[in-house]
Image 1: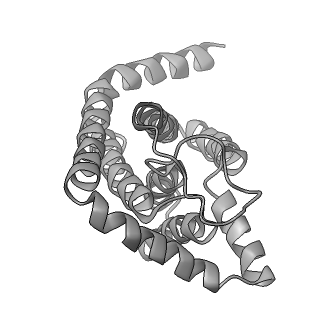
Image 2: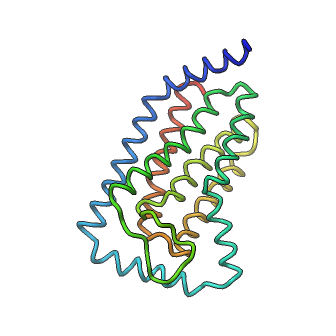
Length: 223
């Protein structure tokens, strides 16, 4: 009981110490998404939309049943049904190894990307592509791509945790995180559920959020 109380105390202390980096990361991500909307919607909208439509139609022309199944599996890697169990499992290992800060930041990293994405989708309300009939098209808004944000931030943090705490080579972890991030983003385009600028903005904002999480973790002594 005493050990549990001690871990909860240090978890709370880590959360307080990480709070400035959390707020800074959310603010920086928000600024980038605002800038993306301004550039796309008000300065380059008439040029971008035909280009984006052309990209999606090109990807659609590559479609076949095998690639459809593969892309559906890849896109699933950034959904909560996969990321939440991974968070619980890896977070539990980190807590068992007394890496409280790392477990906390991993959870904050995933939840923060969801928060940022949800706020901006509700605010900008960009409609999803509707260039062909698709049973997989979500009913919510399009900008930015939540899958792309979650992929780069969550799997980027996992890569850092595996390298720093589980002694897995950075070359391996960074390569896997990069492949998953790129694969998830491309799958969203292939399935026709996001515009290219949704995915690009999600990667950029998620990358900034990942950087803030890693920097904050380093500052509070996690790495």
